[in-house]
Image (tube, rainbow, N blue to C red):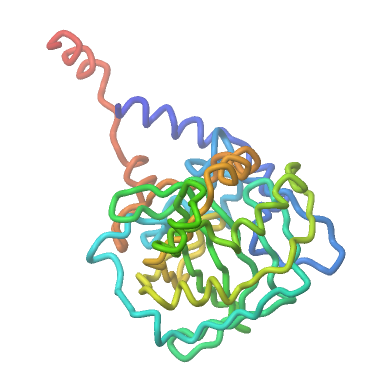
Length: 304
């Protein structure tokens, strides 16, 4: 195992950082009005995947392999502070004219900058910039991976970042009786509306306009639960730390047919779970593992 790790880091060292010169664009980059949708230069598999993000731009992405408060994490007791959401100041107006829906290659996102939305956290006002999706979920719900996760990204004027994470689970199309008995088990109207346009942005670099979005449905549901709060990082390059995470205990539902349509466009786009908060970065731990000498390896083979 150690020799395999050593070979991996030799490969990492040999990967050219040329992609970094192109700018490892992420869904947090602000763009001028009318600018084309940028396609991300990082990905989730192979030489552009999470194991090698720091090599794409060694100057900018160093925390991806050295940071000790990285996201996502396994949301277990001791890793977060549980806060009731009913008293949280969260207000997102309905997008009565719809919103821009983009395919960045690394994710699909709904641009909310023109719509607005505020989130007050520890006395600071954060403005909703966008929300995007990961398949499967990046955070683990007490060790369990969910089908998808939505990240709502808020920023302050000082460019501080807060993210609300919402798990997305699947549900069969319910009958009228089931909807009456269990209304919260129905597919999210918001998600179904957004993803009804997923076919229009099947190609990275494309965008479309959604139908009107009723954001009040989402806010009401989030406030019915709690937030699991912790200080972590961006889950994409440059993996900056100091991000205020609030992972909701409320889950959104998505019909299986819609999920399949989204999956076929988004593909796999989740960073692997990081180490416990405050502990050494997993990649730093792996790089420090010593490979056994040839003689040691030989003795192990004979002992088998």
